[in-house]
Image (tube, rainbow, N blue to C red; front, side):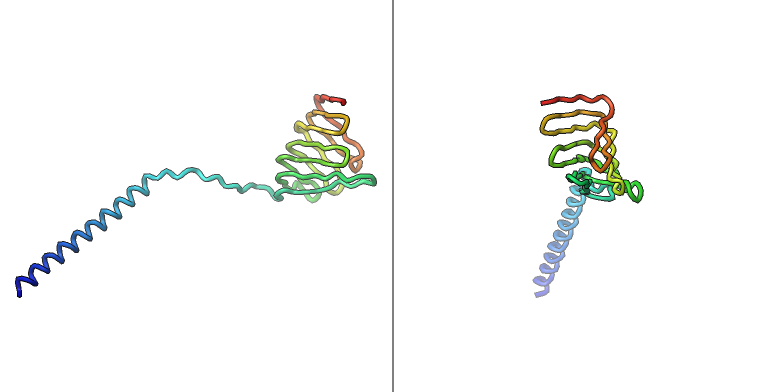
Length: 149
């Protein structure tokens, strides 16, 4: 009977040692695989914008001009810098550009970037514009091309 217990002890120690070695090998294998993974740079979609997708309107007696953009930053109490796909739309025309300074109090907008004005009868490419007098007057700056239909 002693020899039977003696063999079982050897077998138990052998099985335990094999299990321990296989567990250590498994952990080292996983650790080695994890250290070889190249993590790609994950782009954060966070921006430094104060406003995400801002919308404003310029109101006058006869029409409204709706303004939308991808993002905006407050420059001061009244002025907002609008960026990324800035669009002005009214019933008569639309203007597209990349950057605009919009004054909420004076109801004016100014841009010094390439702009595209579209209306029923004309298309104007310019290097900037100035909207004032509550949207009744638009002045285009720089080299401008006008296409009349």
